Image (cartoon, rainbow, N blue to C red; front, side, top):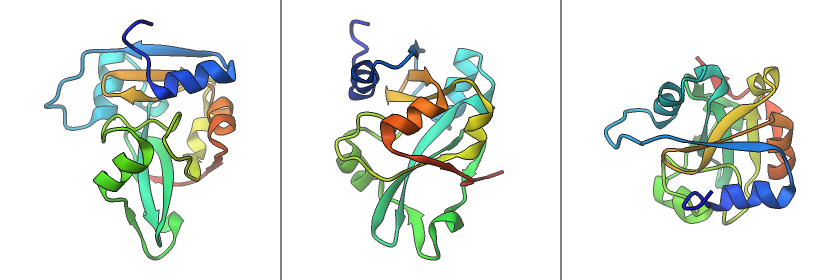
Length: 154
């Protein structure tokens, strides 16, 4: 995996879980990084998840939802909003569009949309645009200390 090492991949390796890394050539003009990943890798978009950072009344929380869905901010409370992108980057150690739920600089509370549990494996960012990591939802939850709950809307 020369040239592909990211903190997310290192975290998965350290944990000893089964995972696969998928790489594609990222198009900087793509409107949706997640949909681009699904298309370029020939994946069902329902199995590809985007990592977002929400600010729920001052508490940053990682939200992982299918790329075709939107984050339901109401699931986080009345005063929830998307986190400032620069704050999300500083806190996670990743750039927007490449934020991975794994290997973040600071471990944040993590919520995974419950739709992920319908699949044996899902794809999330491996910490760089054009790089995805495929792993079991249960392993993702174990590595992040997260929980599955309904947080996506169409």
